[in-house]
Structures are given as C-alpha cells and as structure tokens.
Amino acid sequence: MELVVHKINGEATGKSIELPGEIFGIEPNDHAIYLDAKQFMANARQGTHKAKERSEVSGSTKKLKRQKGTGTARSGDINSPVFVGGGRVFGPRPRSYEFKLNKKVKRLARKSALSYKAADGQIVIVEDFTFAEPKTKNVVNMLNSFKVNGKKNLIVTSAVDSNIVLSARNIPGTKVMTAQNLNTYEILNAGKIFFVESSIKTLEETLA
Image 1 (cartoon, rainbow, N blue to C red):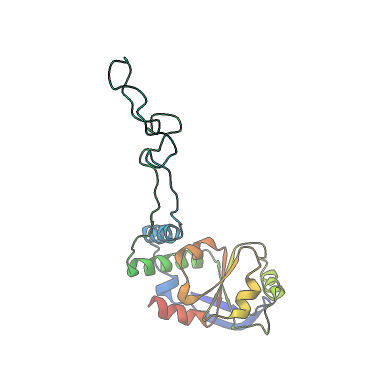
Image 2: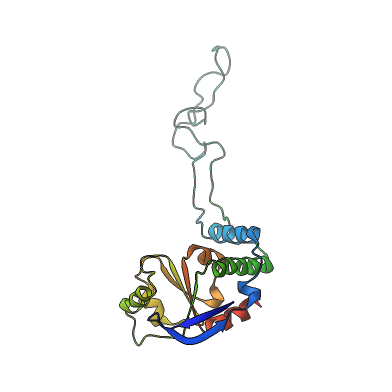
C-alpha cells in the first residue's frame, strides 16, 4: 500500500511511502486482537476491591441463642452472612488480573489492528517534524489542517520528542506514542493514526 506523505499543515509533499505489506496488509486475526486488548485492560486494573467477611465485620461473637429446642434453625453470632449486616460470603479480595500472552500473539494482534486501520483509510503519513518549544496550539493547528480536531487521534513518532508530547498533552482524545511502544488497544481506540515518516522504519524493525 502506497500513501502520500503530508506536511503538518495538511499539504502534500509530493513524496509517497510504501507501507510494508507484512504489517499493514495481512489477513487480520480477530482472536489475537481480542486477547491482546483484553490483556492490556486487565493489566490496567488495580484489583484493590475488598469485601469484609464474617471475621472482619464489627459485631459480637456471642452465640445468639441455644443450639437446640427453639424450633427454629440453629444460629451462631450476629456476623453470620445470613443476617443483615453480616459478613459477605466469598467476597472479592485484592488480586492481580495480569496474565501472560506470547510475544508472537501480541505481534500478530498489532499487525492485524494496523491492517484494519490501513484498509479503512485511517492512517496518515506526515513528514518528520518537531517544535521549537512545547505549545498546544502547534498540535491543534495540525489537527485542524486534517479536519480531525475534537476526535480521537494517535501520533506515532520514531523516538520520544518531549516538545511534541507536551504540546499534545492537554488536547482531549489525542495521544503521542513511539512506534516501539505502540499497542493494539491504542491502535483500535484511535480514529486517525498519524505516523511520522521515520516511524515506519522503526515499526518495521519492532514487528519484524
């Protein structure tokens, strides 16, 4: 797939770049995408949920009534789960939701997600750029040029550029990532993906 390289003001540079077919043109694997996105969201969970069980709730441990002869069911203390205000039976406890996923599956998922975006025409190539100083207006002007301001956008660079990161930080829905740290969830979550021209080579080396 061949795409035109644009300037950050939206104009075409007259150059074009060939996107590697083994990354942007494969048959997408939906199950790999599902697993990778699921792992990303699971790893982001805090897992700090906690409910009190009968040994942890506040209340007397005295036996409520004698064991036999009352004509009703036997009962222990007031903290029993069968009583209002008692402990929770098998309540949630702090835990980690992280799980392992093979590198080849994660790589396939990223390629599949990028292939979907390429097929939908949601990928834009911009020539290498930087800003002299961090200014939100710089990125806003860029997004306005492509008529995507106010939408979810992802800017992919070849290396960390603090001026670009700081310029986009205060824009809702816009994220900046390096090609090396690109993940399936962020690819799918973005509407338009802006690849800096040099980031394609970095991406190719990462997913090779």
